[in-house]
Length: 430
Image 1 (cartoon, rainbow, N blue to C red):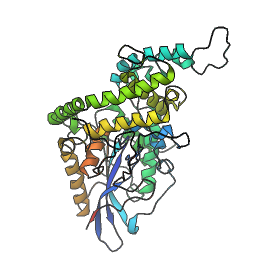
Image 2: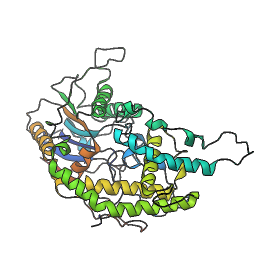
Image 3: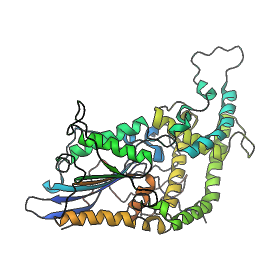
């Protein structure tokens, strides 16, 4: 059974927050969802993987699927990390409580990719040989010299596997400052573990993201150093106990369904990557067959290298330069297809049903705050794409009919307004 084709919406990093507001005449409003979207913050954009013209305006840094950095997530790139903005709350309401679920920042490749990337060496060697200068020709500033360097810089040290990159630390620090600016009423009090509850999964990149966020959110209010740093408490449950942020680790039914989904998609994905490999091989004058230099698997690995080179090093002139815009759009689309089917609304109900503990926790906090029984000012949770994608689906986002498969164009309309055009009004009960 082939998967339903979907639009590119893999949610590289999603921020979902719920707030309780108090307005001038005393009425309490519970906002059950104020969502922003882009690849780095909600992924409500669509990039149909059809043939792109040279003047299409394709911006690679904004189309790296789940590797897109916060700062390059259009059209929020000029807003999300702007720590000077202080937008007015809706209806002049004053927020008194905040519950946020935030994905970790930009990270290094996880350990499994360090082994997989080895299969890319034959392709890079063949490309180097094919593009090498002819004997007797002197080349100044060889732009292909990176093909001789192994392993690539992004995969240099396996000790970094899965850890938060310096860019990710800067992202979460800036987002913490942005939250303090955006919700001054919530962050006006001095830090206290009773007022601000920070939790993160057992993965160090989530814990460091929480710490970086706290540095930005509470900077200047603490007793340490010249900048007034504030040490904070970050709660990290064990894997067996973390049913709210890593629910997918404790759900055998989900693991079984995910494996079945991948198996069902196998033929479809192999065909798509095979077509990409054939076109790539023809363009670069390489062989394309099971024993050739270009295979579907190596196309996926080249794309992975491209994404990490851009996200971690800001380099677009190496692995990414070997791919055309139409190939990259299709590769991103395939990433999103797999995520949609295995983590999101394209799969079975268990994909989103397993978020129940998290949803129950959020609703409990909101009802407590709305009823005036609040001690906390904010519940700040730091997790993963595997947390956010099922949660978004549970909240009813991305349930529209998906677009047609490439290369057919689509008139698909996202279920939410385009990010940057103003936040949706949310759903209120009072």
